[in-house]
Amino acid sequence: MLTIFLQAQPQGSSSMMLIMMGVMFVGFYFLMIRPQMRKQKQEKSFQETLKVGTRVVLTSGLHGRIAQVQDDGFVIETLSGKLKFEKAAVSREFTEARFGDKAKAADKTAEKKEIETEKK
Image (cartoon, rainbow, N blue to C red; front, side):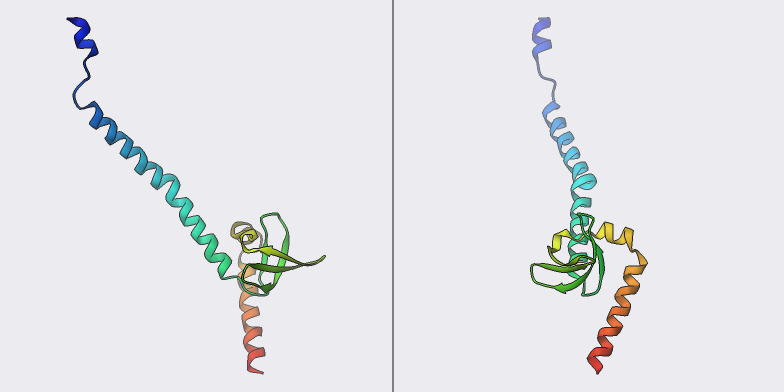
C-alpha cells in the first residue's frame, strides 16, 4: 500500500511546472532579450546618423574621421590614409567613451561649416 502512495503523482504539479516555466521565460525576456534588443536599436540608429567629419572609433580600435558616407559603409580617414569599413564596424560605446562631448561639438561645427558652404 505504501508503494502505491509513493508512486502517485501529486495533484497540480504539472500546472505548477508550467507556471514556473512561464515565469522563467518572462524573467529571461526582461533581463536578457529586451535590453539586448534596445542596445542593438541604439547602435543601428547611431550608425545611421553618422555624418561626414564625425570622429569615430571602430570595433577594431581604429580611430579616424568619416570622409565619405556610402550605402554599405563608410570611408574612414586616418593618419595612414583612407580606408573603407562596414557600418557595423563603428562602435557607439567606444566612440562616446573616447570622444564624448567633443564628438558632439565637432558635429555641430561641421554642420555650421556645411551650412555656410551651401549659402555661398
